[in-house]
View 1: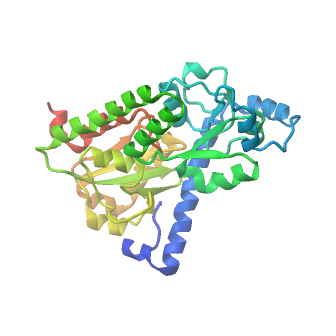
View 2: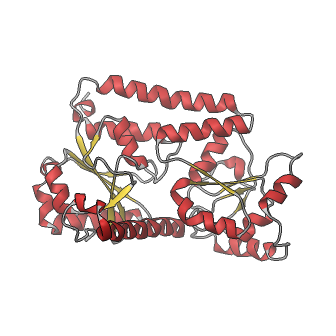
View 3: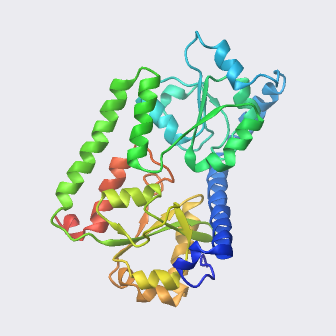
Length: 335
């Protein structure tokens, strides 16, 4: 379960195997976001259908550029399509007209904002009907969503939230654009101070090697240091066992992973967390190779809370790093 047949990680970089691997990983990531989106849309379909029906009566030929020009002298009309971005905009004290449809709690400031669908597949006609001056999504979804936005005549901005540093930069950029530089600087300062504190706190400890598994129902991927969770581990002083890759996730190969024999295994569950945890438990129970890992033998396998460890950067980064510390450094948990 969750593994691929390629014999060694190094082979991922060559010819047809790399192409097949990329297709597999891309397909699994697409499934991850679809599952997450499905979970977020529970209980909201009727409201979305009503909003869409209303949107269908509006003209369909107005481009975002034309809308921007028409709204040039008005307050910004921002549509946020992900929960993480919505939280950032709230922290920057910005109003929005559209937010994602989600079972997760959104800032009270946006109770009256229109729900525009899940992050992976926003309702394009509904978004267009709001006549936004800016539509915000994340670079993790850009490959799939950019062509869809363009076909709908919507100019979207994709924020890079794959790391704490890139999230900080995105906040500073938004702050500068919308006259919220003071708020942005304060938020970024808190994150930068946390990183500095962590380095000082862990300086006298040996850096543990870490394997990060990103699970979705039925399968899982290996998160590299370029993923958001991988970045959190790096900031906390952990050494990702997967080095030298440029992508965020790789297909899993337990034979290769066993050779790295990490000190710690982190299991992140997304889409349907309870089902994914059960899947991981079954995988570790039935696949004999796992019992030979040092992390398993030393009982250093941890399931990460989905609320803290999302697929993109978010304002809970400090809380997430605090949660990681005792997992990576048992000595700290004893203090």
